[in-house]
Amino acid sequence: MYYALASFPKVDTVLIDRIRRKYDPTVDLIEPHLTVVFPLPESLGKWELVRHFAGVLQEWRPFTVTAGQLAKSPDHWLLLTLREGAAVVTQLYRDLYSGFLGEFARPEIFQPHIGLGYFLKAGRTNDWDNPSEADFDEDRYAQALREVKELDLELSWVIDCLDLVELPDEVIAWARGILPSYPQGARAMRTERLELGAA
Image (cartoon, rainbow, N blue to C red; front, side, top):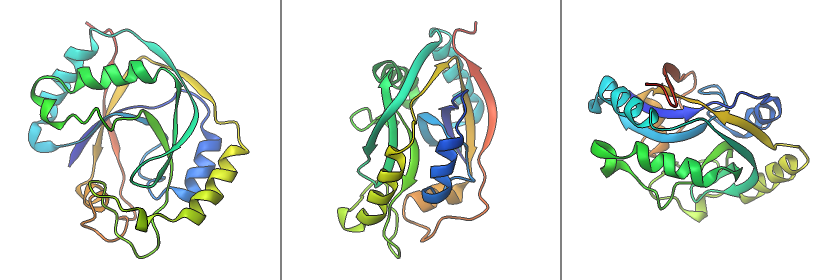
């Protein structure tokens, strides 16, 4: 089991869902979301993580973000990135990775986003730590990009809470390239809601 921390937009995501249904293998794993803490091993302790996150978030106040720009990640995802609020989310990321989580932080590659699709060539193995441009399905990506540009995907929402999400081991094994294909039927589960500014 792994734990991540994410914001789930409190807006209509039907257009995002439509794109993800075509291009994102994780569409049935988890709803559209903006990850603020990436998957951490359960060996760190769920309640230790909850206490740490709650302590950090009590110093924060709700803030607004707006998604609306597109980008490609080094590991071949099409991302809906933030047009407004990216610097604030990045600071939140840094704060959440303080203390005993400091060794897991990778602020140099952090880009707040909602994933829209994944573009790995058929027969290639995913590896989030060592992506190769030779594995990138450029044609399928270009098709998805054309479709997304025809939609109005500008979304604004207030981040006033974050959800702790449990992720199955096999999903992380796929993401690291250990499993050759995405584990069908895998589901994430929201387990704790943590409010910003809660004492």
